Length: 212
Length: 404
Ligand SMILES: C[S@@+](CC[C@H](N)C(=O)[O-])C[C@H]1O[C@@H](n2cnc3c(N)ncnc32)[C@H](O)[C@@H]1O
Ligand code: SF4
Ligand code: SF4
Image 1 (cartoon, chains in turn blue, orange):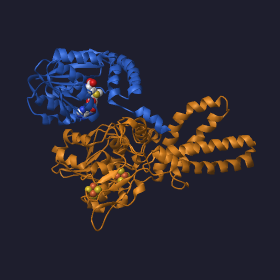
Image 2 (spheres, rainbow over the protein chains, first blue to last red; image 1 turned 90 degrees about the horizontal axis):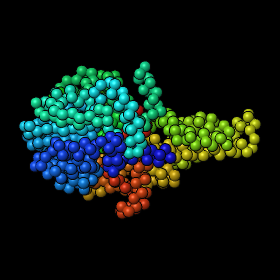
Image 3 (cartoon, rainbow over the protein chains, first blue to last red; image 1 turned 90 degrees about the vertical axis):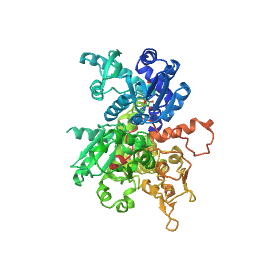
């Protein structure tokens, strides 16, 4: 019996995933994706999306006329992305293999809610590899959970986020993880933040970076 | 002090992930030719691995892979300790700059998720599966595969593990039963307060005595235990407490019921049996496994990865044969690693024997009859791994013994 109860508790599917992210970010993630596609990605650009998931952002970007390569570790996610964004080129690989994609190849590298899933070593590696993959003047665009900038906000954010995270987990078995000391890592990998936009009391942030 | 608290929690809460920081750690004083060992980032596992290596005086590089805080076996079965995980850890940890060789020792029980052929192709490293238990690593390092006694490749369920799993079974069962019991206590006075210790002790007995109870694992063993405990109860209640007739009958029935239920639930917590509803309720073995001799190339890897000693080597043909059919627990390690697709089963892919994974599989095959190709007893794996859950941590007894 504990088996059957756990079953419901543990089941995680790509379908539930989208619902989970929408709930956890109180719908902000959809808005952020639209903003990325319309403001930071343009027609004719070569874009790499890391952890493209179900392909919602990839679809917005191909609709804008960008050439999108989406990578994800999950076969199940990519199967759905193939339906949502048929024009994107989808590759199954882990983020730590993007260095195999070449050099000076992309105008934009985007990642929404996926870098937070990486370990610290992996995150450093992916940032360094991104810097190699980007053309001169290219941009790295990341939206993810981030620690709020001040401790007062952090406390407040916790109070808001914990119930939302608990509810999301119960309903969809999904959660996100905050990027750890992100700006420090960016600096080490040779990036400079040109724009940061905060959502939900600074717990969700959109970073736009350039190579220094 | 902190470790003591953690140990106490793990006595009850094995089911939950307990992450420690992934990355490369030196153990002892490793150099450029020291062995590289991979393990999960379940806190308890890493701690035991480091302790054992230190005790045995082994200098090594320990590559703690990001497995979401889940133990080796469950993470491998649950898709969190896969070929991708190891590829990523090798590339990002900096280990390639620390050693001159490219030999990698993986925990045997990661074989459910890690395919050594693919790993080699993608990274250039030479992976091998070490023993199940880290305490046999010293012997393994000394003499390679031949020095690892066959017995070291079996997963066992020894007394300390049975005690830990008994507490976990009792604790988790109470989580589910507490509320219904409280409600029923409104009408049946004292039910709750008597049932809590009853559930816990019957869970312990089911787990500790599992090899000695008569019957097949599952309902049968639980029922045997129920009969024995209630017999003792009848004697004591009549001779000492002088309990009334109906009350005795009622409590006796309750004891048998609870013991049978816990007996049914117990195998899912063990590393030896899988939590297959029909198998445990009816006592019939449903897993089928066979070698196709025409395809087998005799590499011997299936014998190395199998935790249940299912295979042997045919002395004449040097190919694998199935010698221990009913011990198979459908972990999928042999399927993942056979280079010749020479192993045929009626289950599609690996899953650990933990309750969560098994139940997910059971529910999937009940829930999707439209998928076709299903004969009775055929698993429907919709993905290549069982549960994709962060919570599927360590419900197998193997956690305390299973290090790389
Ligand atoms: C939280 S989802 C975000 C998906 C999508 N970007 C969005 O915002 O809707 C995280 C995604 O990252 C993928 N992912 C996780 N770890 C990864 C890794 N190491 N390499 C590549 N993709 C990964 C997961 O499969 C999942 O699709
Ligand atoms: S024979 Fe069964 S128990 Fe042994 S490795 Fe294969 S699936 Fe696992
Ligand atoms: S069955 Fe597969 S893994 Fe086993 S010896 Fe034959 S080829 Fe190797």
